[in-house]
Length: 62
Image (cartoon, rainbow, N blue to C red; front, side):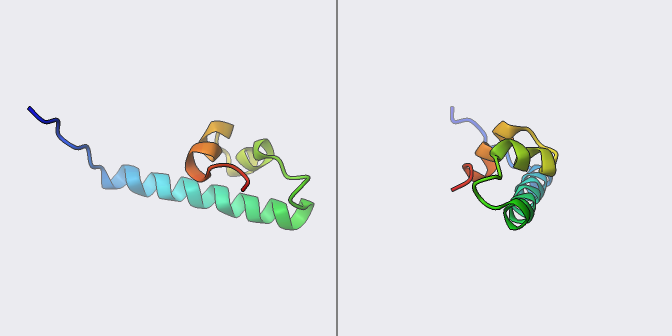
């Protein structure tokens, strides 16, 4: 018996908003402090998410 797929538009919207928050924070920090001085930890703090969320949502700095 095949399993049912889980689909939640609200959850997808929240994930998209989180990703956008991370990208906005990264752009601001890169512009202000430069790429080299901007750590993933700093991006996470500015976006108010955990460091692992940055990696999961965007794959890190590259």
